[in-house]
Image 1: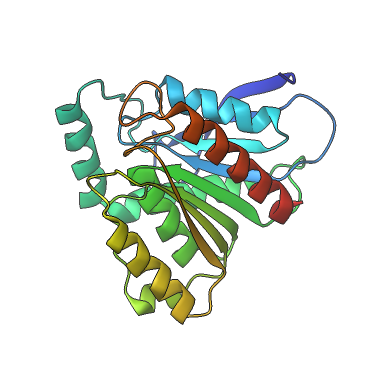
Image 2: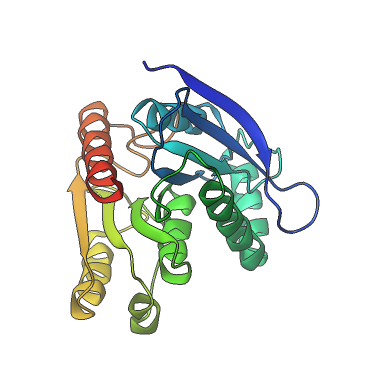
Length: 231
């Protein structure tokens, strides 16, 4: 793996406590920026590993800590944390935009259009960031649970979107995936949904419906998409 540099950085939004986990190539080159949005567990080992893998692939990667230091270990705790975020969704979105702004202010980040990639409820927030923030050039939501857009929501999206879903994800039926796809296509948006064997969170070896072959293939495709459209 390439040498990477890791820091915690403050996000200048919502007062005190907002920060992000920054992983970047340890060189003197300029690289595309990517905001990675956590699953409902928080910034746990899987998310840290993904941030480091993105950095090793040549992306300056920032993970906004939407739980402000908390990491859930049990589903009930994760569910409570998600509910707290959903009750103050605009706060979370401000912190995601703060992460985008932070990335774009770094001299080693180029170009200034960034990517966003997110997992589980972070996949939902990835879609929402693509709707709301013009700084987002590429969006890669993985199993974005709870995302049920209106045509008006989809009309706001300017980013290229590549979405990933598990074919046996009990929380996201394939007919719902096709509904989302239909809305994007009707709006002439650049959108593709790819379906892989496995259940929800098929990329996470610690939780969910992990599927090793699907995880490897989907991650490779996500990296290729980010490299193609951010460089």
